[in-house]
Length: 139
Image (cartoon, rainbow, N blue to C red; front, side, top):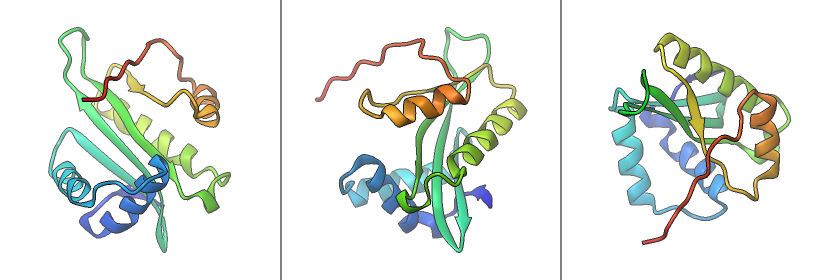
């Protein structure tokens, strides 16, 4: 079942984000950002739950000057490794697309690392097109 995330999901979501990044994330920073996101009207955290959280999606609404309407960005999408292949990611992405339409957003953007080839296939299968380059610089 998909629902909006709550404070009670913090530990499960933290574990999933660590899986996504393949490392332990700074817990204090995570806790603060997660709590802030729960209270921000421009942030949507969705969980897929079956007794515990098995999938998570974070979505941010952006108000850019160069777009005609607001846009949305999928920032994190992760499914617990032992539950992959059960269409949990598919359900999460369809749900956020429905929410984005109801918010009258212009488009959804996302970034994914170049090495995540299965993620590329997943997004392309769902109609997402590679239209931008994303550059980063560590500070």
